[in-house]
Image (cartoon, rainbow, N blue to C red; front, side, top):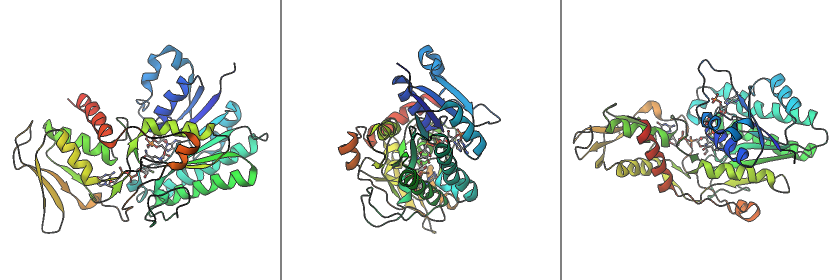
Length: 352
Ligand code: NAP
Ligand code: G4F
């Protein structure tokens, strides 16, 4: 039987790497788009090349969603059955510094892919997945958020992603394309980028424990997120494209925790006793209450720092994934506690 072909924009990222594994295990021929960089940055997918069967079905191509001729040529040459657009400047904090670039990638990048599909795939056979996000809900009032909730994004990233969400819907309706949005809430893993909060906290605290740094500096500790496991969330991405109709789905765990809960959990799991205090300006800091590893009792180990606060913040995200359970038979299994343990175990091995 002819293998299905998938084209993955953003294959070198966290989700791209898990999705590549999933598709290869389902016997797809996977084309992945990697960017030209001065240093090789395929570490998240390098292990695939150790497996002969998997490696022969993975083909990497240079590309960039800011380059229409490249996007058009790739889709025209490969003629994939399924296209996953995971490519994005995905850091919300950074999007305040790189607003225009974020729009070029996260908004117009999606438009470029959709336009290319519209022109090339006249028989409407290709399926398109857009990596949408809970950030499009922003600070909208009615929680938990579902597919009918109001959108109120509060960052350049959120607005750029909202453009892509609506463009995906519009191309579906206007041109009868199989174009779906997965509205995914935060999802993490040992492969999470090091400047997102979960990985930053875990790496930072392990480094303090091992004496590589003294203190970890963070921003807002009060915001709440609905954190799931990336491996389970890419399964939902694939299921969204296997559903009989193109549609939009919230993918979440339905439970949320504050950034402070996350920090407390990591400290507890690493057996560091601590006490939170506030300085004169109202910034919080945590001091160690025991000697452990290279940490000395009374050492300031966590401190809030102004530069890590964003100009605007999404305060509280929690998702209602019942539609995905009903129509896709998707349900998250991995709980927050287990996710964080897995990430800690992995980084304990990485950091010597
Ligand atoms: P990630 O680790 O930051 O990966 C992003 C991927 O996009 C990387 O492969 C990156 O390449 C690529 N990329 C960036 N700019 C590009 C461009 N101009 N052209 C082509 N590729 C480009 O993000 P992730 O966590 O895997 O998330 C995957 C997608 O889901 C993103 O679109 C993100 O916005 C969205 N999302 C993520 C979450 C989450 O919690 N993880 C939740 C909701 C939605 P490099 O490796 O070269 O940088
Ligand atoms: O880990 P974060 O950077 O993730 P954020 O902003 O929620 O965005 C992630 O999830 C979205 C889905 O909801 C995705 F669309 C997006 O691509 C990305 O994957 O920050 C989480 C929270 C925020 O409230 C932030 O203000 O942690 C807070 N925070 C506090 N100190 C910090 C820091 N975040 C980062 N990255 N670094 C800090 O030092």
